[in-house]
Amino acid sequence: MLTEIDKKIIRELSGDGRMSWVNLGAAVGLSPSACQRRVESLQSAGVIQRFTLKINPESVGQAIHAIVQIKVERQDVKTAQIFRNRLSSYAEISGFYKLSGAVDYLIHLHVADIRALSDFLDNRLLALDGVVDASSAIVLAEQPVGYLPA
Image 1 (spheres, one colour):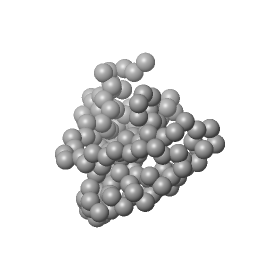
Image 2 (image 1 turned 90 degrees about the vertical axis):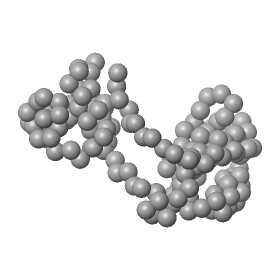
Image 3 (image 1 turned 180 degrees about the vertical axis):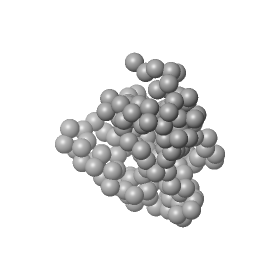
Image 4 (image 1 turned 135 degrees about the vertical axis):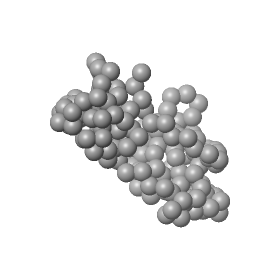
């Protein structure tokens, strides 16, 4: 069970994972060493899984962010694993999720422009074995909030 201090630490680190122990301590009301011990404990418990780097896609020439819903034909475990491995190998995909319901997968895709999006969908995604359909939506604005425990 997370304490209120743990939740405050997670909220602060969600906004800035590189925050110093001094600044984190000031934000949550603990000493820097106590913050470090708490964070290490949260990591050991698996609450904090990793610290990541967020790149601005536009700054590296990927101005289009699209969300793509994929339907696949029912397939065996081996074919499904091959499909997921292929998705994982595409540099344009920043995340994908296996879903329950009418849509089987949802992917976040970053590409340079509309032409690159069309090319990716037609020649790479829809060409994969088992893909029945894919529909895309272009993200017009994003407001990241991170996960903040209640």
